[in-house]
Image: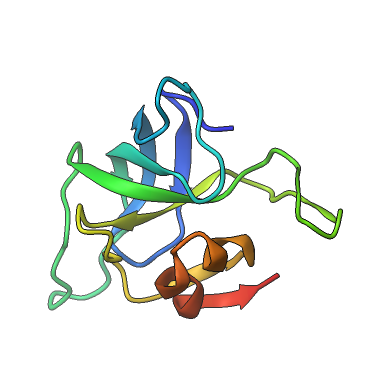
Length: 128
């Protein structure tokens, strides 16, 4: 469960490394987010740039939208199998729900594909 002020890792190649949750969106009074929920995040640290031609897509302390893709909290799928990850992670998106990065370097749950995030699931390294 992701609440405000939670630090999250960024799993795409958008340029951010660590973000902080500012607000949970579209939850109608709930104060926490689970996998597949949209949150508002602020960039805390950036990935290092290797080479001069790499253009930075974002700066520190910018505000972006993100989708929670991994949580440390155990959740069960319809088959009853429990699944939890080693860290809380997010993939950054635009306000129009398009991904900011072009690759996702993490294992994503198959639940994301059923929650209108099939584009993120297609970019992932592996789906379980």
